[in-house]
Image 1 (tube, protein in one colour):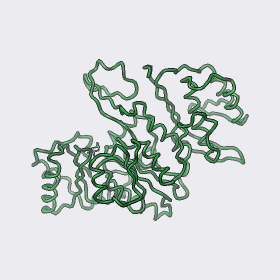
Image 2 (cartoon, helix red, strand yellow):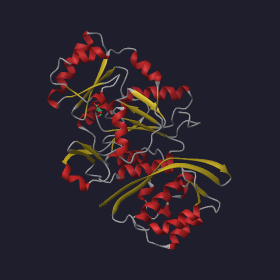
Image 3 (cartoon, protein in one colour):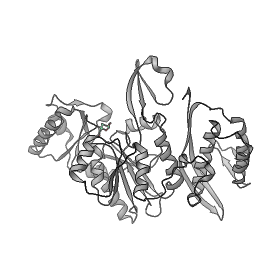
Image 4 (cartoon, protein in one colour):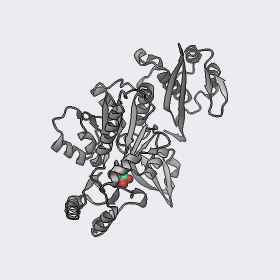
Length: 413
Ligand code: GLC
């Protein structure tokens, strides 16, 4: 990762489904269309709706996003480590208010990519190619009627994936392990979420991929000062066995991960089972292990109360767009005082440059907000900023680059 010139202050390596991102998949008939706003995929006559009933508005994720961008983005690394293939990962990013990670590990630690353009790590592909025979895996697994092949998108060069019910999982795993051992193929079989069975090369997996990254950073003299791994299910267990990491199993972790923990890592004080769900559990762990600030700007009622030790150019951007969201939702008073205080925080020469190239003075941008007051009142309207990167250009001037996203919907909450 060339973005950081020094070792990252914190590297967060987080699973997505039910860890960073809360979701419950529910099938509805088309008639439910009118209640949907954010995350909808139309499949013939059926809708696939992804909502976390405990967090229908993705507030935990949005709280994490604001904390990360305000306090960590500039000197830390965000790594997503998911079982999803690139196809399903990109789909999730369209459905949920997610940040852009620095590194994306997909297909259960078998694919590592860097940056926004997701450049693949060819060195990792070479490592995995060494002791792998995909054809042998498909040949032997086809003899098991208990195994149902997952969709084509989830079959990857170093990952063959099935569904199998809980009752058969253990027996099938045992039988397969014996067959592969007899045939001289060293594979890793992972059962997750009480339904998914993945077969990977022995050197693959989320844990091995993280160990590979740590080794790479160490060679470059950039081993992160702290690493926090976050997960909820079977394929995350390996993450927790990497030396020197802190770990959080979110409160909603699956039985298979809790059982793995009870059998393998019970006395390890560096691993906690959070009392908070999903991304809120990650924030809780940052605080528990003292890894850095853990007050999300979203949790602050009065935005001018943001702690002064955490103020930076990035946190100002986050704070500004929090205010913008609340202004448009009419959650702050329609008072000239607010606008005046915002303007007072801006340098008179400060400008906002739109991607189109259009420039607007910061004061004019704030004045323009008058006409938007309350236009999103009672609606699902959320704003988040992503990749907030700031460079100091003078004694008291910064150039800040960021992406701003809005999630909008007409339905009253
Ligand atoms: C994701 C993948 C699936 C895999 C599962 C568990 O859901 O899409 O292929 O089996 O994670 O690792």
